[in-house]
Length: 424
Image (cartoon, rainbow, N blue to C red):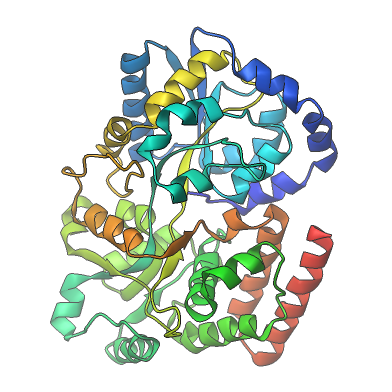
């Protein structure tokens, strides 16, 4: 997924260079729409499972389009840390990226090619929500998605069965369950934030549950203030469950927290499906299950969640744009998503005509959970300005260390002050 504050910092680090590039965006867009021959495809799918899935996808794309594809794979953080200089330099014909503001940011700088003509051919494969997340702020298309995945509460079925636990659907039930797990000698909620971005998921879901989707997006877009009492409620609810979260989160990577869940040291873990499930050994997967985050405010129930979408963009300076668009037209189909998901078993496709007969239990439940939502957010570091996401991530680590009322107030003021500077 997004996986990287450093990438966010990199986005905001070179405004002068970006501004210089934006003036030549129109010429680049024209260049991107022409050309034929082989293409190169920059990929941050460096983990074995996603790398294998991407290899299958590009092989199928070549079979369908006769376009030869040379893949350049770079590890997640390196790819994301260098995305700005990458897009401004000599990028590949296509590359992997994320939906939401993280895509719109680069499109607005003229660093991505418009692909409206691609969407003229694939548009009928997707619903309006998917079309919307594939557009830039100017209303043109810049992104073709391949999958999304839900952020939900994972648990082991055997633990719940042996202890007599029930899946909580309300905040009171959730906190009572956490209390009981602690009495039973379990870590109620596995938790890690060394990479900075994971805890943003908890901030997002509490804000969505307490204040709803519209307020959450207003906050992300600086149309609401971090000093708003609604944000105070988010941190106060978080402080209520923090004693039940795995201690020392700021020094732990999420993979180790997921192992605590898999080893049954922990009772629950809130994280993305393609992270927790992908981290489980095959022998333990059948025991893994999840539930949507419990309701807090009855006005919003369980109507919203983070369900980030990953996909592909076409750098404006990439070569052989004509061939690249042929590949994107193939990727924007149900069969292409099926080809990818044959290896990547923890995400779900976005095409309306996708064949889901090969989905496992986690994928089926993920698709149902996302479909049950009235709306989905992308994620804290995708829905806001990259610099603001970095600021919020740092402040959340301070909150984890000290969830007192006075520190919450200080954190809210700092976030508001930084938002004023970042958004202007």
